[in-house]
Length: 77
Image (cartoon, rainbow, N blue to C red):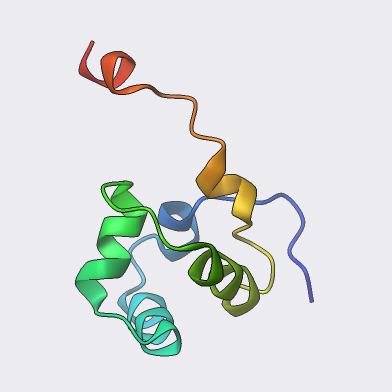
């Protein structure tokens, strides 16, 4: 099942620790690494992005990682 209306990883996980733990386990990474993906302080590798899409049933897509519109200067402003 593909969820219509893609969302970013932070929105998908929200405050659901169960989703966070399950995704970290499915990706074979730490929960801290998933938090870094969520906060955009770490960019996942392309194969990890594809795995995230698969594990979220299409709710989080590669475009959600590669379409950042905020430059560091805009975020700091």
